[in-house]
Length: 293
Image 1: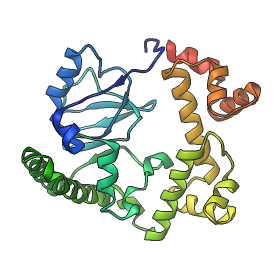
Image 2: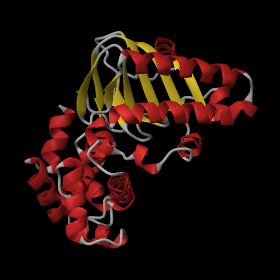
Image 3: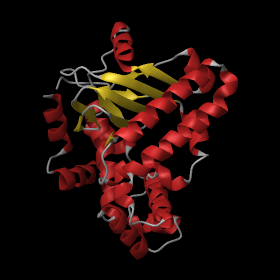
């Protein structure tokens, strides 16, 4: 892969996105418009909105945060705001792209129980690509059509669009989290709370015991919760989040080893280097060189 000194942040704006906080686009037309504007959606770039990519036709590999995930027709790809991704340049893809602002996503998720939004992908156990069975696929298409119709009726229809999106996300979440069927609602909510805390505080808090205190829990209970939910310890999940961000800083943002260490709260660069090597088998400098090719 070519050297990337600064990961581009491809932004998209439209009247519907400004008025309602959401837009539904034809995927082929969107990709072409991005290329026409001089950007390259087939190279890693940062997502500026919450995205749902509905693949109606096509198969290939979608790049998300240093991993390639296979996709095929009748599936959906989940992307969170600020994730880094790239479309497959070798394969044509047809479908729909749903873009949501942070405010619209927050308002929509207020209609849903917290447990449906457990960011399971951060636990290493989930897959950002979800295959849709025929019934769910048709249901999603119908709801997308209704959402587009409501958006065309003007900004006053925002609540209707939010409720339709909430209903669709619940349906998707039920299928996506079928592997968590053995968990209680309380377990899923607590696990989600832990992952959100890690995402918020990983630059200053690296010990599982400290997160347990924030959750008014014991280290033992938190560790058991994580093992039950995803098969990994709390510390493993914390380290995973930190290592992912280090890779982003080094490879995508083009920071030096010293700069990355400072931004991620490591006071000692030597400790930072040892920490990264212990978890990846490479020094930060070696990883950066390998990525830059």
